[in-house]
Amino acid sequence: ERNFITNLLKKKVENDIRVKLGFEPVPLVKVPKISPSALFAKFKSKVGWSTATLSGTLRVSILRAEGLLNKDWFQYLGNLSDPYISILLDGAEKAKTSVRSGSDVIFKEFHEIPVEGKFERLTLRVMDKDKFKDDDFLGEVHVPLVDVWEKGQVKGPSKLVARDLLKGEAAKTGDDKVAGTLDFLVEYRPTTIDGHLTIKVEKGEDLKSHDLMGSKSDPYVVVLLDSDELGRTPTIQNSESPVWNSTLEFDVSGNYDQINLSVWDDDKGSDDYISHVAIPTKELLAKKEISGTFPLYRHEDGKELIPLGKLSCSIKWTPPRLNGTITIRGLHASDLYQSDWFGNKNDAFVEVLLDKVSVGKTGIVQDNSSPVWTDEIRFKGEGAHQELLVVVWDK
Image (cartoon, rainbow, N blue to C red; front, top):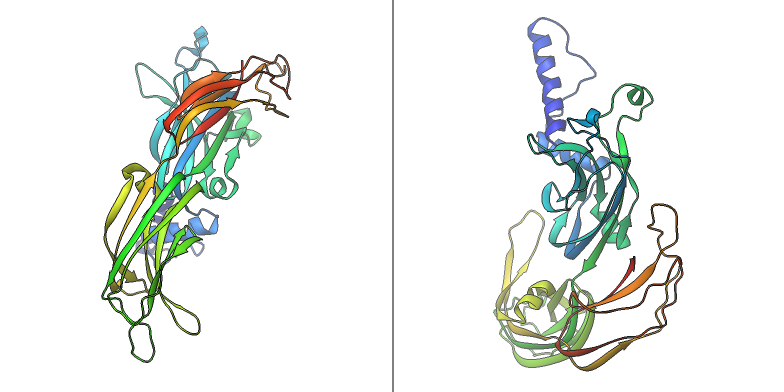
């Protein structure tokens, strides 16, 4: 954005000088009568940049890099670059890999980045670690997060963009913007909620009527996980301050961003929507229970929020509990990604993790891209747990 605006201002200054010296301004340079930030937003829209609303975790797997530039000061003495990957979310560094050595390196590192809000892109930036000066830039890959959100994942290998780092013959052939490749996998994992929900809808206060005849509303509340309806309260007739004291209980499992308590006015024709309260599942998982009196608003373009009353409610999440032995058997895989440098097939094994703690591994199946494991993994599961993860590794 800074470069785009700087170039725009340079052109404007150029034209101002031409006019003051008595020359005609360059007709091809047109400076729109809008702010630089607004212009840049228009530019982003034109080239297809857009935001994704994310609530969950980005899992970034950095696998390997090949053909990296050697920017070491003493490369002519045989020294190699010491590359690492900086992982940036909309320009802010969130994680980085450990430092390796060489132009063809294996990383095999996994990083989880919590996300909550609107984001444009993830940048995987390759840097060369230096002891006596600033680290050198070796290239980067940009991953549009809209693609990750829509597809669930985006994977490499991708060419590393490294503007102006290569000169000479590479510049003549147009390859001066590519400096090797990076193999990676970026996955989006929406917030997963598993367990039991207890939702108590207590009362409404000062609910604004939508009735054309001026009578009071006949309100009820619908409980939804995102847009999936779980249940609803009874209707309270002709009341601006209804008291439901209705308790709804559900067993839930899946990826959901928020719990919605939507307030409606029961009409003979189609029911009228009043407003809703949204509780992020991520916040509920962290706190286990959320209660209070929440304001209700109507949003209108170009206007401030219009108050429509209040809703008092509480939501409690109870995670699932295990008490016994878990057995995993019959594991097999097909067409595994071939990660060996020399083109050999994988020597694959499976590891099982319960809430990120390893609870067992299979034996290794040698030289096989579609392995079948005959061994069982057995472990005791006691208490509340959230995630069972099955990971395939190449030894």
